[in-house]
Image (cartoon, rainbow, N blue to C red; front, side, top):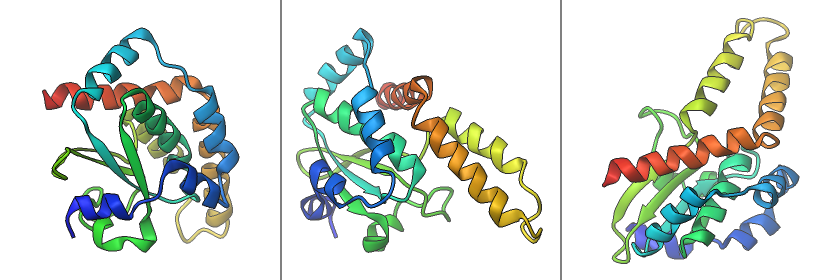
Length: 186
């Protein structure tokens, strides 16, 4: 299926938000608290001229999505760009074309397309700094067969989600990572 068809199938941000059962408060906190600097706004103004659109693979249970979806939605709004949202597990045919490291169905994934529906760029699932953070946290876990592994893993993911959705410096890493991706594309 062509990316244009996936885009047409997707939900608006408001439809996605209304359907959320998990992490809605975290997503709203980032969305409402995010601020752009003048350099960001200049970059996004330039981006508006490219007439891009985006297909977003996501899910409300994903902590990374609670951070990245509102950041990219606000970028889209500042760039006159429409994002359409697809739930990962309902769209595996598309998801499996955008596996992280060729194996993981990690989300969110942002697929940007031009007015002809051709892919121009992909970003996701995390900024390098957020990846370093989760890698460090995971290194503190006991072996997977340890009796307390599951409990400790849940605690780490809870701490991770809380940190990434409350710290504006982490939000900035997502913005900067996307701006770097735009610069690399030039």
